[in-house]
Image 1 (cartoon, rainbow, N blue to C red):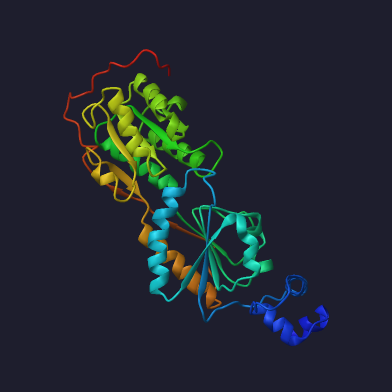
Image 2: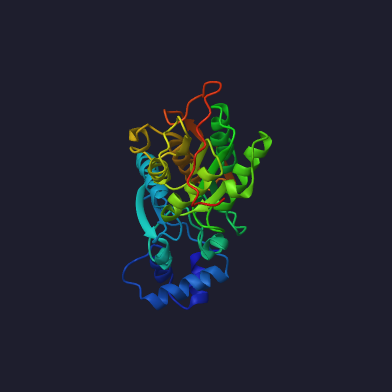
Length: 335
């Protein structure tokens, strides 16, 4: 369909339709919305700003679940990668998505968030949308998910603690029940424990927010853990180390610790913390590749899954035979 036909159906001039599609500032809001509505009814999708290569990056506008540290680490690599490819980035909080109708962009990236709008993305926009760390719930052909393998990550962390000689491993999943990836990580941890014939009772794997960590770790210590896995959330490892020190536990002599990587923090803890980490550079590259393919009109994959990596440091190391930690725990905490 040509824009002349859109103009005829909308009852405006071809020049007005062209200005609407190019987001000319002198078009009244009601005219703009009317033309876009007619275009959608006719199945017409203008390709926006492919020459300028403007990319909208959609981020959570508040901490609905603990993602701020994650967003910061993703943005560091994503900004570098997209800039190297000649893209201009505009940050858009997810509570302001209506602005997508009034700005020029050739592609969009959403970090750790999905909105109802994304379910019918290709009905509104003829540009690619890349979801980072979230699977699309709709069937839009222009939407691609780029995420890291959470199940593999949980197996990586538990497997490392098991290789270090830990035989009763507890875990704190940073987050809220039924929100984000918390349940997926909890189930992955229990599966990793089960396949290694290690205790995997429900009370050994807990979902909690930072303000609950001290009490929850006390309960795990009372249950006799010799290894602790804290995944998700940029500050989980630091809070876990503090909690263990309050209970008089040494790392790794009494309890070996593996946490999620927080750039510029984890390696400076005392002792430096062994961590699991997403490959943020590879993730940013995969996002940019998918965007570039979509902008050029090529088919993009529905999902790209990347492996985590383990960064070994001093908070976990192999135990000598017979060097089991002392099992004296506060009696005020129940399992």
